[in-house]
Image 1 (cartoon, rainbow, N blue to C red):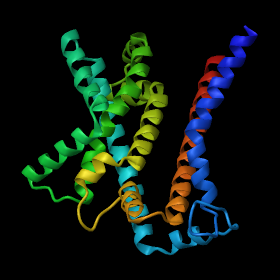
Image 2 (cartoon, rainbow, N blue to C red):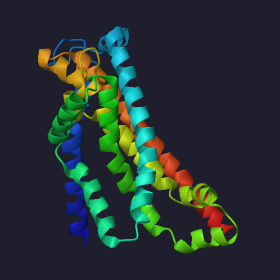
Image 3 (cartoon, rainbow, N blue to C red):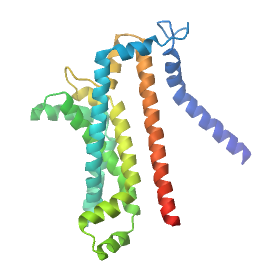
Amino acid sequence: MMKKWKWSNIYLILVFVILYAPIFYLMYYSFNSGGSMREFEGFTLQWYKEVFQDTRLLIIVLNTLIIALLSSVISTILGIIGALAIIYVKRRRVQNTLLTLNNVLIVSPDVIIGASFLILFTIVGIKLGFTSVLLAHIAFSVPIVVIMILPKLQEMSPTLIDAARDLGASRFQVLSKVILPFISPGIFAGFFLALTYSLDDFAVTFFVTGNGFSTLSVEIYSLARRGVSLTINALSTLIFLFTVLLVVGYYFVSQRNLRTKGGGVEK
């Protein structure tokens, strides 16, 4: 058991080193006073200053955050409706069909989804830019939210709803006072997952973005194609730290929900 435990831990450490070593390497050289990633010449915040002094880049950051927040909120609302629709469908065949259609968007390659949206927006006449990117992000985020909410709905006992109805609760009260509070961990998980997916999506966004509008992932790609610049390192470091903050925030929210429920059970 001791040998197995040691080897499993070594394997886990190796996996994390492989995953995080390139990120920390990138972060390390974002403080390099030299203009390359070959040799660390000295500590500097020059590249971070350049990021914050670039007005165009700050506008792109704002665009990315607005798209991510809007798409996450809208996709969470649609995801709740979709999950409720799937779970309360009476026919099993119809329910399985809806689940399959929902899962297809998750497993489909991003290139195919992006190209499909590009063709659709071109046919419909939607101008490529803010609206097209927002619609595309909502579309690929909704299935993620549905998947996160469905397990919580399946865990919920039907007797809770029956008890609320017996006490005279209306349909809206059952939804707002019973169902939504119970599935709130799934809602938060779906929202944060949709937010992170939207923030770092490149493939779909690359297809549906237009002239005069860009997001951080597309901008970093275009900067990288021009040549190695430590501004990219600084920008990538800031994005990584922001993502870490989101994950930590979600962790504390989920822990708070667990403590609240635990306290309620104890009472």
